[in-house]
Image 1 (spheres, rainbow, N blue to C red):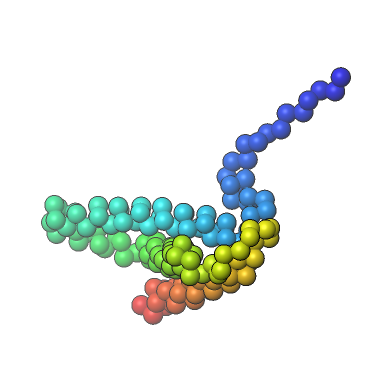
Image 2: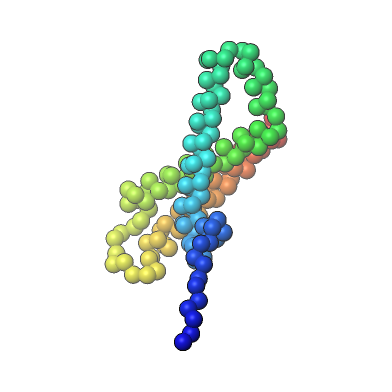
Length: 146
C-alpha cells in the first residue's frame, strides 16, 4: 500500500503575498487593506505626538519636532502620502462599484465575468495610474521642492 504524502499548507507571508493566480483586483484589495492599517497607525501616532504639545508643553514639543524633521521621517511622510493616495483613490473606485456606477448592466454570471473584465478592470487600472501620478508628484514635493 502506498504511503500518503502530507502536504504543507502553511505558506506564511510568501503564500499571502504571492497568492498564486490572484488577479489585479485582488492585489488592489490587499494593498487597500495594508494602506488602511498603515493610515490608522499613522493617525494614532499623530494623536500621540500632538498630545505632547498639550500635556508636555514646549519642553517636550520643540525637541520632538526637531527629531521629526530628519530625513528618516521625511521618508515616513512620503509613505503616509503614498498610502493616502492609494487608499483614497481605490476607495473611490470601490464606492463607484458598490453604487453600481462602474459595473455596467446586470447579466448572467458566466466566467470570465465580462462586467469585471470590461468595466471594473479599466477603472482599476485608471485609479492605479492616477495614484502613481499623485505619488510621483508627492515625492517631488516632499524630497525635491523643499
